[in-house]
Length: 256
Image (cartoon, rainbow, N blue to C red; front, top):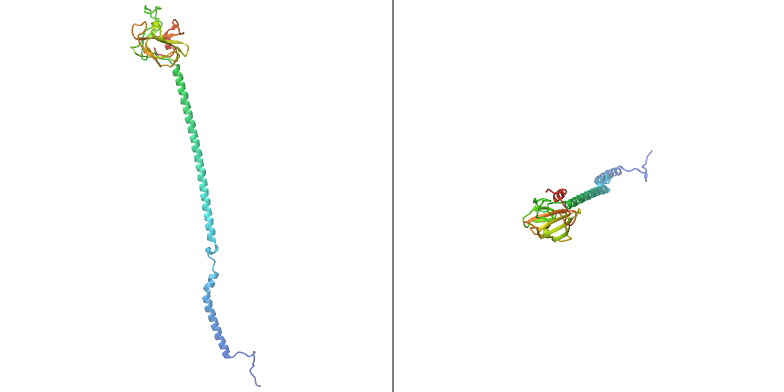
């Protein structure tokens, strides 16, 4: 029985066709491999993780760091401002205390000065500085019309400064007969003092005087045997109200 080759589309490929197809397949595989090899870097690049720059993470981190620095600076500035305000308050308080202390010191000094002045005005002293009594109180003799000395005499060369023994008001300043040029002062404690035989008078009636204030100059005017200061202490302004001048001065703290 004879077999015949099938023909048409169901016919199998010939050996030559199969070889050609194999060669083409190899070529295709080779080409695909080359192309795949050449394309692999791009593919690898596509499959790599995106960079930090591409994702924007660096920007986020930078912004967060900047915000932290700004916050830190703000906190530091706030702390500095608080400390500066505290220092300013402390300085103001110290200044206030210093001013209050200075005010207290000034007030204390003023009180001390007023007290010292009050004491000075209430003090008494000798009518002639550094002098001594040359004729005592109630010394008898024909020199005095009353028969005795109504005051005391202080040694004083001609022209010696004479001062008020205390604070008071001048009630007489002028010629006084036997007393010559004389001054009578009503003292602030209500007593009177008299200064006689002066060569010059340097106060006037109504004038107020203080302890140690110059009122005249010693001399020998009136009933006098030589330059000296006649000093009397009285309970009143008139003659005859005299009291012991030494006791008067000593009771007021004067060393006579």
